[in-house]
Image 1: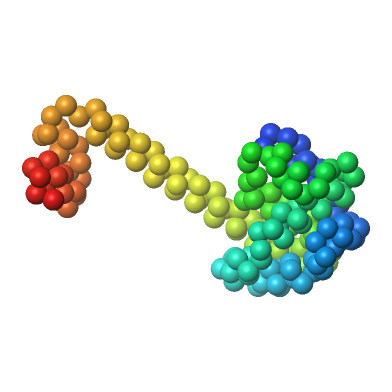
Image 2: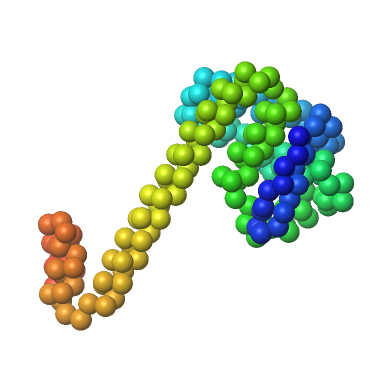
Length: 180
């Protein structure tokens, strides 16, 4: 199974066949299956928190080597992992890993297992999108507050712009009058 993804505005082909395991092993000296199986085992139960907990146990270098091995399997001209990874300014694992999981599922696991795991992956994608939106809103509110602070011309306008909560208003007054 093969897919093309975009990493740092560059198309990258990833190919999951049994031979990618040999590439991974030759590069790392490790068997890939013991590294990834705990994550897939937890996915069966659709337990996001358990699966994420197991992902924490996976070393980031193993994740990078996995992605590199899939890319090397698709394109034999790809350089060593360090050189290849250095060619990217950004490496968004939150966008890359769902594709990697899909490739691995399609290559190594039964249709029944794939169905259960795809539900988990969809739920995880939705949670990631929701978190991104929340972060975007918080950042936007922070920028707006900063703009209000820098645009304020008098102490009264500064205090009123921040008086959404009594605590905030009191802190601003104390700071303005040197009581803090």
